[in-house]
Image (cartoon, rainbow, N blue to C red; front, side):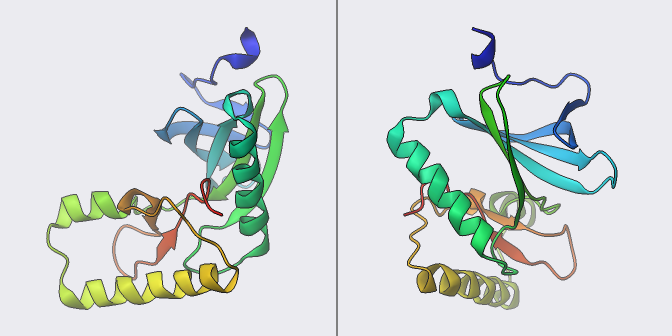
Length: 168
């Protein structure tokens, strides 16, 4: 069935107001793309969620993720900019902040042991993000290095907690 085939990008493909540039990551339920706004050229991440693969519980989790992300604006929580649906692909697209520095796993692989002053800064930032989660009674349930993103490659790095798909 055509609606069940994942969107693939050999050349840039347009969805909504965004050009999908390259695949950043994927799992069985979604694909995350590095994308660019058609008019402004702003670089964002677009999370393509395959709605036909979601059972009732996972649809509820997606609703929770959307409700939480649309209600919070904090430097240590990934930002949600826009949400739209494409019936042709039976997908929902979440337009979120793109973190140029990748995730914490890639940082540790590249740099090895984290110096104490950097670790302290990272823990303070994560603590600030967790404080927001706690104040909203949110449990992440999938917290791992791959879901902690870095806002830039070097310099004044800001950590962002991401992927609230399994949060409660």
